[in-house]
Image (cartoon, rainbow, N blue to C red; front, top):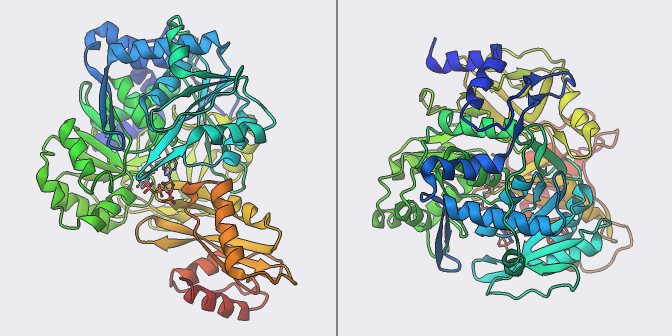
Length: 627
Ligand SMILES: CCC(=O)SCCNC(=O)CCNC(=O)[C@H](O)C(C)(C)COP(=O)(O)OP(=O)(O)OC[C@H]1O[C@@H](n2cnc3c(N)ncnc32)[C@H](O)[C@@H]1OP(=O)(O)O
């Protein structure tokens, strides 16, 4: 049996012993009574009875162990021309100070705090400060518009919001504070306080009696110590797109999450304390939570917060500059970033200007890694390129080529094998295991390992319905795929209407809700069509109400603007086609998959139950004529 097989099997046959061993690497105020508590199955709790604090383990523990002067966080911001390093001691002190500022505003353990910030170190400080107090942070990606932020405020009911005056996108600033103000106006729940980081590029107006300046709040704060909380208490709620417009609040705990992330740094990423680990993502996504903030700090690495893009800040050599300048050993990004670099600098001329010899491995995730991009990255960097697969819900990689256990041969297109802790199966419609190589619904046998979601915030029934009820005893991933004769997993497609645009997971259902709200729209569908750069792009198909005689171009423009205003720029929604009818089955189900196949130039078989096959010709003509 290989080392990987041994470790994987042990994690499944004796999970309590396996995870107890991993937990020894962290500090517990009180040891657990049970490693795995299944009394509330199918939900489970890890390290029940233990007392823990994630911030203590990520910062104070390292300072006490002699890492105080080591760089904990490097803020590298080409858009502001800043590089700033925080040692572990400096970061701990800043976090303790901000935790004190939060406490002074009445934030208590269990309270929720919304963090709506760009990629500045204060975002990490705010997250860790919440963890320090036992408060629950809920970070919202800056590319979401005010109505999306309002939905999250109404669900999480935060006592306080932390924001900044602006974010900086290439060539423009984005005023965040007016978006926060608008969201609070839209939401039924109102946070009592907002703490705002004033950036020199844009000055935000503060609402008297509600808003505080970050620096003033810090200046008068008494540093706060870590609060021992139940290991099973929530650390954060992170919202992710569901199939409707209502986002799902993934809840993660303190203890199990820290144990899993710490383990993943060794087993999946093969990183050692003191090394520089860079995940080029955003703290608003799970990659940012897990691999910009928590995992590198839990292990005692240096992490990088990069406020820039792969191209245009200033050029397609930006990533190589960061890797060389900070001696990055392990780099993680989304394939779309590499596609952008490849387009600008296909022969890697800019790479030649930098010494990236410190780089050991590149990891790709967030969307499907196409074999061309993997081959190009390998050819340029001359290091192993590891595609791996996971989800917001899971919190850490579920399928990977575990470099810290046993590197395995790469099969381009496969994310390799299930990571220890994850029992992956491909199931047929009745829940029977599919044969090797047969495509089915990918599911994970319960219990999920530590670090995976505990439930959905305020919506345990939603958690059961969305993930647990389709196959009792399993978690439904929402992806279809297969496991081959060597045990390699192949992810093929989503089984729902979720699309992936530049590594951003988006709901077409949410976009349809926005389009349907336009007064001239009778019905609509949004589909994800293949795009060379972003992987997929949303495309709207709209039927107008009879009698509407306004200019179609004007309506199209309004619809595009509407999605940008209500969901955000991140949706990258730029194309709407006005069509006379939508294709449907006789029972009225819109044939989105068929339209997607037509748009992508793929062969398709319309279902026998199609109501009127001639409509497909109309759709084909509209798609062919699209700009
Ligand atoms: C494994 C678990 C997971 O999957 S977690 C998710 C992992 N995904 C990722 O890490 C995302 C990877 N993608 C990226 O980082 C970006 O798409 C990269 C590759 C850097 C390209 O960025 P960009 O050129 O801005 O394109 P985009 O499609 O992301 O942006 C679309 C529009 O949104 C805007 N935007 C982006 N970020 C923000 C932000 N923080 N605040 C405000 N606006 C933002 C962009 O400027 C862009 O706007 P516009 O349409 O061009 O006007």
